[in-house]
Length: 292
Ligand code: C2E
Ligand code: MG
Ligand code: MG
Ligand code: MG
Image 1: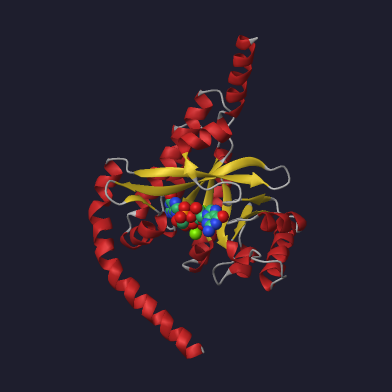
Image 2: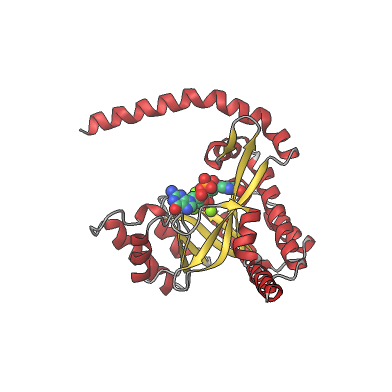
């Protein structure tokens, strides 16, 4: 049984590798022009407070709007950019766009909810990271707490000391730090012991898929309790069903993100649903008044 599974895996891997090279070449050839032509578009996925069912922020997730291939998900091009270093440029582009968006909401008199951005491993180990981020926050005159930073757990392995130092500096500057994909790597408990972060984003792989109680659920319930004891809050990613939501309420989760509530959506749609909502209500009121 083990042997055949192993064989299947190798087969997959080989096919993937061969197919990838041509695609990877195209991605590398087109990336700079795509950036210039603003073909990297940012979608927003709301984070929900599980107890109130209200949005309490969002995560910025990039997509590539390709003229021939349509909307390309980040899983296709981000790994390529992590290998060739272009991710540092794209990360900065996304951060600046989000700062500009937050500035825009403030200028319109809105009280924005925080937005988190992803910080790739390459950006995390850039010695200019803190300067680059504080520079943006100052340039767009936004509060530090509005730009949250998601750092993937797997980055911890590369150089734990440097990562802890960088996170410390970012927190001192006023940023909120989230550990992304918590539980998906090999360093989870070690990370928890050493790191000072505000929020853990727990990987979706622990979520229940049927009525039966599985190990994943016990781990998830314990991680939530542990995080709370350590003074951190938890966002559970990838919540897709009502059953998962009910389970999470039962084990005292704080925040959730997932298709059950909303997929990542274009900025305009996010604004209509979550930012300009009072405005829409006012408009409705005006219409009623006019009708009356
Ligand atoms: P991530 O930061 O862990 O983001 C969560 C991913 O889970 C997103 O995939 C999101 O669309 C997806 N997701 C959300 N809810 C559900 C759900 O209910 N079910 C399932 N199956 N998936 C859900 P996406 O947008 O494809 O992004 C994939 C990864 O690409 C991200 O994982 C992140 O690591 C990376 N990424 C995306 N945007 C950026 C960026 O601007 N910079 C960097 N460095 N990485 C990014
Ligand atoms: Mg993330
Ligand atoms: Mg994640
Ligand atoms: Mg991820």
